Image (tube, rainbow, N blue to C red; front, side, top):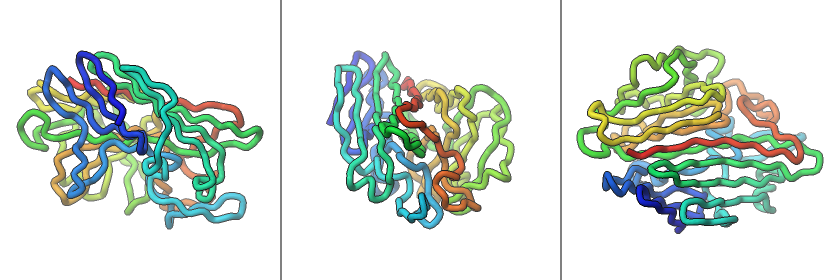
Length: 291
């Protein structure tokens, strides 16, 4: 277990999946990251790569060959190597291998970087294409979940406000697949009150178009909460498992999304996929301030 610590926060990160396990605010004496109770959902904050969401039939085609991959990809289930580590920062790495190439035939270097700064934790995704001539097709995303309630009250006492205030496109899910062709308007002029029944059709997904966006998770009393700033993501998902009354909410920055309802199965045509030329590097990031 990797521990990052300063006078405000103590953070624990597992090398398995480069997953954030704990964010303990010393002043508030509160744990913000979901405990991972398997009765509801056994993870904490997995990293999603090289896909976000589900593929049609859990499969895709590339160069005339069919490959199979489970929801959210394989990175969350693999051990990362520590590239560098300080008291307040760590860089973890996953590279392609014989086992990954059997289901994802690309060369890649995927780094997850955590950096503490006061009461904030920054998470950076760095994807490199080490190939000499082939492009790299991928999606990447975060899935951090937060304990609710934090400091009293109940789940429905909390809200999520979105800045900038505007009308966003909400992408609906049909089963596990996205339907971007028929978006519905989502106005952030009024904070989103968290209600379990709003997640019966899975996540609430907003299209961010890589615009810097901030999400404030708190009670009306606003004594303690979490503020997430997403720097350049395509989408964000807000999720809690349907029908379980789970005591957490996930706020998920995504550079990619589940297959569309009319997906062709061709990985190069996948909606929201990122394309990285040979030798190039992709960067995505978000920060969480725990107060």
